[in-house]
Length: 339
Image 1 (cartoon, rainbow, N blue to C red):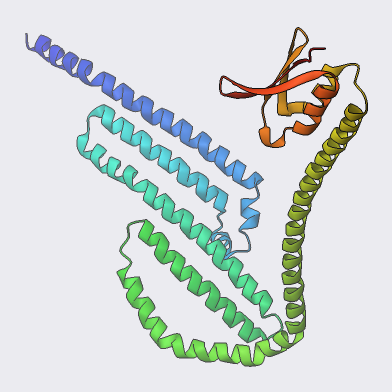
Image 2: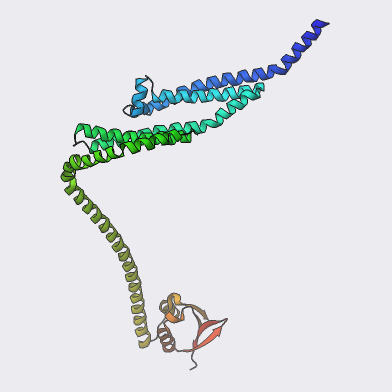
């Protein structure tokens, strides 16, 4: 009887926890496999993109090289462990370990801040290295000590600011860094001012003297080109406007010449095809309706309508002309005159 009760208890425990344990194992195995594959893929992709070679000469790249690591491997490993963490979180929730799940959930929620800070730090250090090299190239004509000092100050200042920003993104208290920065700034302000004065007074005077003429000439040429480009654009726009005006004027002249020629013809003798001539004279300024030898001409544009040529043309061809209103439209009526 006791053996049967024990077997029943064990059976109940297995039936209750076996699915949870199996689900947790599946989550861990899948997380491990996916993490490994993702690490390999990301590391390989970053190496093919040349990230390691790009960062090799930077401060970050040199630090990793001294540690015998590569940035591509570091990023791949970081992604792998994030996947592992998510798999462990899924397994703990499957097992119903609420305390562990709560801790892991907090870690997962913190990950975006951590990754954002890391990305800002990497990009910021790259920027600091680039600007430091730029300052080094600009001070190449000065003494080696002065050039190196300016490069160091540039990189250190930007790097310090980037580190504070990245730590703030990571939700880390940076008050102590502000206090330290204030103390260092107070102590080094005079020294930096003197150093910059010496640099500009001694080191940069030759560079400025050597390149001042070229800089002024280049600036003058650039400003001249900008002004010239704006002037040309304005002239092009004005030319287009004038071309449109000339085209409109040309069409108007052609219309007037045609009307004058037709008027002269109409005054001299009757025409054979009256409707065709009327259509040519009126154009789109009126609408002609012919019916039983009569004409009804709807005036579409009274101001531009060729009143004189039309009336003379109709009268010289034996038509009586009068005006009327029809549906609030101005109509020119014409019918053959009685013999």
